[in-house]
Amino acid sequence: MERTHNTEPVVVVDKLWSIFGEGDKAFAVHQDLDLTVYRGEMLSIVGGSGTGKTVLLRQILGLLHPGKGTVTTLGRPAAELCQEGAAARVGMLFQHGALYSAFNVLENIGFALREQGTLPDAMVDAAAMIKLQMVGLKPEHAMRMPADLSGGMVKRVALARALIMDPPLLLLDEPTAGLDPTSSDEFCALLRDLHAELGLTVIMVTHDLDTLFALSSRVAVLAEKRVLVTGTPREVAQFQHPFIETFFQGERGRRAMAPAPVGEH
Image 1 (cartoon, one colour):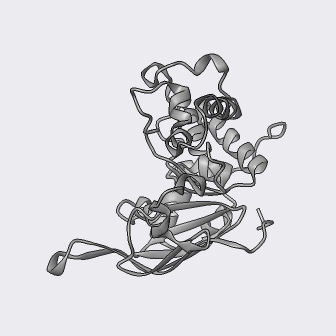
Image 2: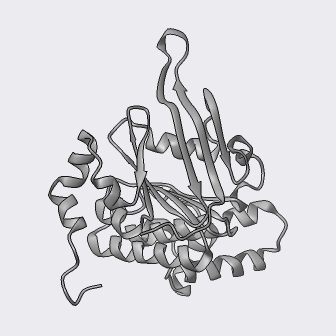
Image 3: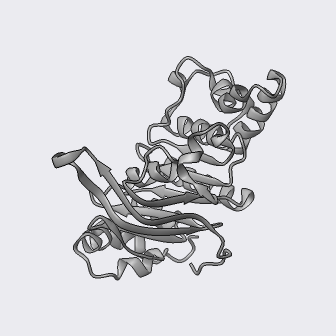
């Protein structure tokens, strides 16, 4: 896919060092890492174990602070996102859904809006019900508890909760992890539809090739403590590097890149 979005940057990571530990025990997960994400993109971050994929998401969210360098999210230092009102700017879907087990589906979805304290409960519930249906759930699911939901439904509720404040930027950490192939395909289709419908910019970490090819307009590969290469999935797959060759050229990679059989879309 060619980049069809405009060139307005939504996230700019400049010469980032992510440092853990102190003194002699300090070590850098990222060194001089550069990455720009543009409005309307669906960017996938991939890399081997220990390359700091989720650490990079946390830097973009402002949950971690750069040892050196800068991270700018939606035109402001990422650290400011941790202040009040962050949910209105960035939605986050954690790997395991991270629903509040004591709250029902509707309460989970409306949580950030209710915490603001500016709207009456009836309006919060109405907004949550709209988001619940936007992610493909039915009104009768509203009163269910998280323990009674399938894995795919948990993901949908968590996605609705991430979107409750209509943020322009959505971060996803392994969005299809733990889903069977059918649920995974359905969730990818939902994300594609919402991306188009809401004009979202999406940044996701994934190790799943089918998800990567289904959703990504661009891929950024983390290796050697930096972004090694960015490009469309097919462009990146041609780059000569041991991780990329293993990741893309194995059996699953070849299958994901194979042309669809005639009659399929």
